Image 1 (cartoon, rainbow, N blue to C red):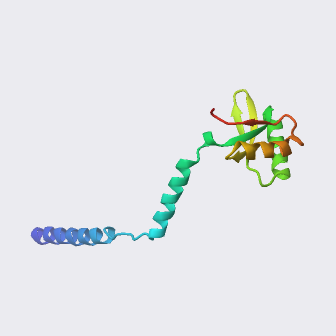
Image 2: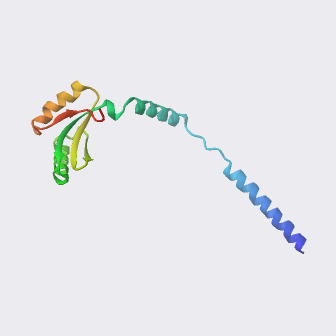
Image 3: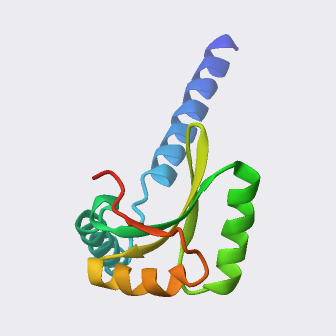
Length: 125
């Protein structure tokens, strides 16, 4: 009787192992367009770095005031990106991601009408 149960157990283990291996070894086919898009994204990401972009600093100071200025800016200039940066002990509000200095200076003139202390920066330089 023990011999039959051991054989049955071995047989069941063998069947379940075969079924599991077959079910997990199926290859997933990926659309080639996805890989092409990922490759293009990688190429773009390597060409554009934060160091190559100009920004405009519109505020440097206390956290609550920085947040207020940031929210106000987003309402007035919807088409320009902005971010708050913490640089101990102050907060800075940086706006824009301009590829060229000319583009940044053009926007700086418009932004200075509302934020007279705004200045052009190139982070990490």
